[in-house]
Every structure is written in C-alpha cells, then in structure tokens.
Image 1 (cartoon, rainbow, N blue to C red):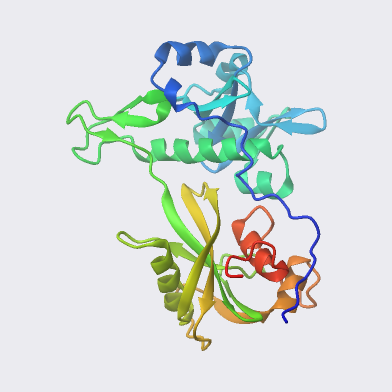
Image 2: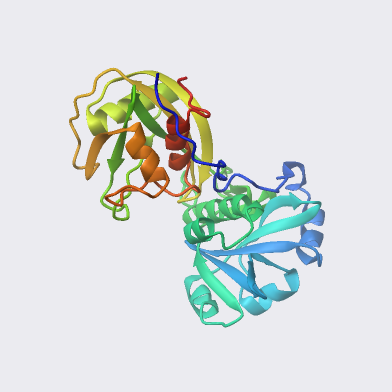
Length: 317
C-alpha cells in the first residue's frame, strides 16, 4: 500500500479567491459605467505592464484607489469595468511606464509585480483574482489597439470587453490561452522538470500550450512525450487557475505514465527526472536535504503535486 503524507492545512490557490461579480449585463450600460467611475465607493486597480501600484495604509497595503485620487496619480487611461464587489464597482486602469516609474519613488505607495503580491501575501487574497483579471485584460488592450483584419485603429466598447473596428466593422474580443500543466505518475514516483528560468532548486510539473484542434487529454500526452519522452495513458482533470502572465488558463491534470525511460528535450527543459513520494513530500515541506523545492502554494503546480503526495484530490485515485 502506498504511503500518504500529512502536509497540514491545504493552502489557497492563487488568483482564484475573487470577490468579483463580473456583472456582464452592465458592460453596455454607458450611463451606469460613467456614474460608477465617479462614485466614492468605487475602487480601481492600477496596473502598468507587469507592475501593480499599492497604497500604504498604516502597516497594510491596499491595491484599491478611489476615483478622486486617479487624476493626481496619472491614471487617465482607458478604464476597464471588472465587475462588482459587494455591489461596488471595480475598474482596472492602465499606467504608462513613465508614470509607474514616478509612482515607485513615492513614500506613500508601493510598486511591485503581481507574482510578488501573491507569493508574499502583500494584498488580501480576495484582491488577487481581480488583479489577475485587470492585468490580463489591460495587457490585451495594450497589444490589440489595431484591427487584425484591416489594420485600422480600434475603439473600446462594452466597458473594455470588446474593441470594434470602425473601418471594417470587425469586433475583437479578449482571448485566453489554454495551457495544460500535468504531473505524470508511475506508482510511487512522479515526473518533475526544471527550466533554466526557474529559481535554484525548484522542480515543477511539465506544461505546454494546447494546440488548435486538440483536446486537453491529447495535449497532456503530447507535451509529456515531447519534453520527457514518456508515454502517458489515462489523463484526469484536477483543477484550473487563471494565470495572467500574460493571459493564460492553467488546466491542471494528473497523467498515468505507461513508460518510464526519459528522453529529455533539452531545448525545452534544463532537466527532468523521477522523484519518489517521500522526496517530493520533503520538497513541499521545504526540508529536502539538498534544498530542492516545489513551486509556492500560489501556483497550481504546487497543488497538483501536493494532491499526489497526500492523496487528497489526486485525480487518478
């Protein structure tokens, strides 16, 4: 019988505990949106590329800014309506690089990136989903200002959830890139890989984009065999996570390994190898003798790996 490990309370998965009701039925209501932008109870998230602005509130950091403060902060870009939180409007507002550079120098503000906010818990968990939404949609706007059909400049409509081309009348909608992220399992062993961009000692699940005309299961099998040479059989869905870097949806899976010989694609990975359950448990607990670790709890890879180690939520059980 396989050993299961108790790793304590299950941590939160990053960017998923949102308090936002997207209220899509209000996106065409221009009167409501105009009033909401000026309402005192409205809050806006200020995002510039990879960076987010937080205001210092005593010893805490708050990512929400009231309408009265936006002009002074240089936040005069295209507002995107994110939805409602307890009935109060929430917007995402982009900041140009020069503006966010200047805000980073202010003593009353803290400028950092969204990964750091999630990993270090700099903002309350209910803000992470809204920040992920704001960052992803604002980056889409930054990259889609011109019509892909005819090249003409596009205009923002539907509270920021569509861009229309006045020249050829094509409507452009935000897109999310599906990514499979999976743990291949061979009994008491699992397959982990490293990329050169990872921090020292970090090993994680394999992952890759879903290709056109491909199912999730097919993508899992293809990516594992391409990156590590391992053929997989059964594939089971575990959970998903919005990943705003820039705008992906991570689709977590467990996969049954049918072969175990490794043929690592070193153009994709720095390395890959099999780990036994006890070793991975020590990596999750940050007690591995060689300092090897898994990704932090904010990443879905941590939860996919943890579910296999503890048996709690393991999708192939």
